Image (cartoon, rainbow, N blue to C red; front, top):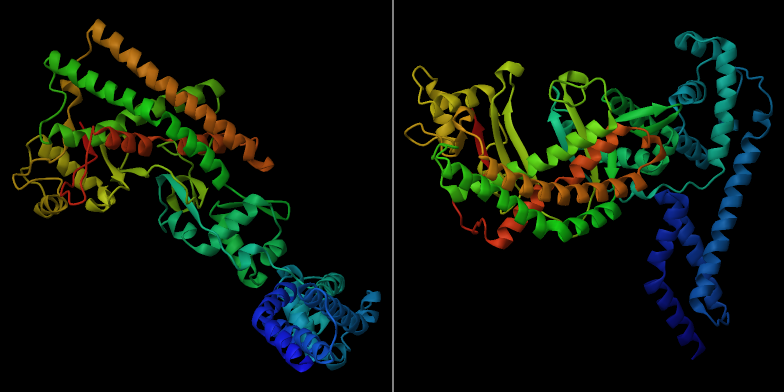
Length: 547
């Protein structure tokens, strides 16, 4: 009967604790082989004690007590062995070329520990240690190759040994990002560099987590290596690239993220407040549009070319109107602060390496309820300000509408759209005409399929019409400003200390997180002002051209 009880306990241990013990050990020692060995040792002690008939009151507590004691003994054993190995050699700065690596690192276990620590020591020391210990090179040879005095090499080698000794003696625990990388989304304003920056850089999971780690806690390269669980020789090049690309900045020996990242907590509060005002702001925007259209019709203004049904035009009109209100708020805030940032390009974004002009806002991955994103794409490669063409395509992340039109159009393609709107396509490149027909921007008669507005055909409000318009506009403005101020308070309360004085970054973050296109789109769909079915075939929703 006693033997049956023992076997039951052993089976319980094997089924319920063995895997948990392994992960306990893996977290403590951060090495698969060490974790397996330590798990086996703990399990052997537990099973041996059970077979001896030990009496237990709390089985689980007893198992974890043995595990912790065994781990503590394992750490002591490692520490004593390493200290005995290296202690005497580190007591003096006198370093000679006569050494015996086999006596320095007698056990293969110690070589493994040295190699582990070499992965987390900076290149300033690592190259010297590798050259001296691993490559068997003499001190004067190392000094010549690095163009440094022999005394400097000895000093750095001595310092490196102490750093290694400290690291070897500890059981490293890597950060959460080493085994559970997180995701960040981004808002970008501006134009990419010639190598696709910033998207070509921030699409990599490693770079996202470097930005996230250094945003939460400014860190040295060595600290980042531990947090992310990546050997420093590989990480250093990535850090240099991120600094050169202006994604990171260096403050002393610590790296800081060079952009703002909105936390999930902040997003949850901001989106909740946005839903509180969604109905009222959408109603004001709709009233503004309908009052304006009515006023233009009453005054017999030809405020647009009738290429597109009015119900389809509403998609772009809604977004343009909320953008107009939002931009007014951003301009007013900017004017109040009298803030001037240098190094801005012609479109008001930061000039970047490789010909880029862009600013970024990072967003921690948020899985809660929020409005669908609406982007604005347009004409690329405009030669200069004088040739700027006001063409835009709102990209609705709603029922995959954004995929029905190209990401953007070239300057030459938009010039052809202008020619088509002016009914002057003689001599126009036929290939471009065919491309625009294929995209859906032109019909087979070379007429635009979306709203085109000629500014010189738009008249002015009468005094009474202007009074109504201004009243509606101010109502929308006040609601939007209330939301902007709410967002600003949330953002400023969580912004890291190293960003507190960066007024440009704060304003950029507020303007982007506060943008309300998605809320107005969702509100207009709920109210029935616009509609879109699952099998809807319309393509040119959200496109506009102002001439």
